[in-house]
Image (tube, rainbow, N blue to C red; front, side):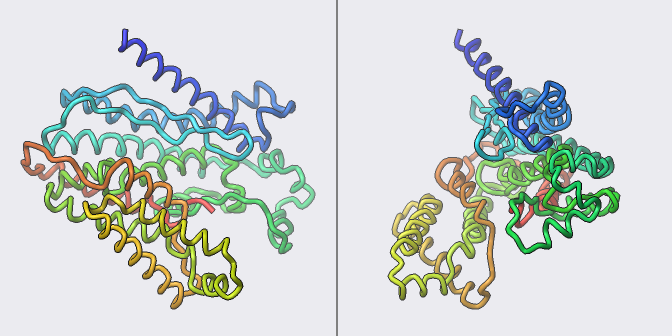
Length: 377
């Protein structure tokens, strides 16, 4: 009975995620919401075919890569739980991912490696070819003018008028990684390539980019992320549990870099701007929360947080415009407080064979190629 209830929950989450991801696709492709009367069933079908299928296809292949490898290695796991995430009042992508739950203790490095690497490698292949298809099959300008009919009066020179006026323009840009930049430069027809602010309206490009972005996040070599499992299996428990917190602190450092700068704080002090100073104190506490489980000593974690922020501020003193990517702060909090930055021990510490070592380092190379320092802006 409990098993049937779990399957119903998983099926329900999948159906809801499919539905709201289609709503999100409608918003990106057509430029209007499901709550507006102008949409048609054909529009919804287009959103499903061109955005939901490739994006959730990537996500499903990723999760079932884990699932089938776990079955092969005789490790009990659940079917995927999909997480819907659609906000009717603001742009969203329909989901923040999915996960499977391991129901028993994994006792070997080899099993952790095989299960951990199978998902991102399988999903990477799907996302990579979806992105190639998106850039190699760019539609004409009429497609963009359906989303922004106000651009049509300018024709092919729309960007010079819309973005060169000096006025603030609402935009959503996808910051290229090494791999997405190569795909764009290799496969896109420059005559059809839209302004970078408009790329998110092209569903295959958006779905492929999101797939590679989520692949990179999963391959972060920290804690119990897929990349953490891979690196743990490659270098062993002792080395990994020394390296992982260092990588986590560096990730948190980059995420918060430039969030506040010395000149901003100096100005706030001179102007008695208590709101800014209060926000800075909240930022200090948030950073501490991210780092609060790096060591077992809370005083050490506080010192680590304060030292990290001090270095961030000193860097803004030398390089006033330096910035990390604050969007990573939420993921840093998730890692530091919930997912964990250390890896559980295993009984069998037998090293990986050469073939798996090559695959493991290749997976970490994929992380480097897919990770953008500024993914959305």
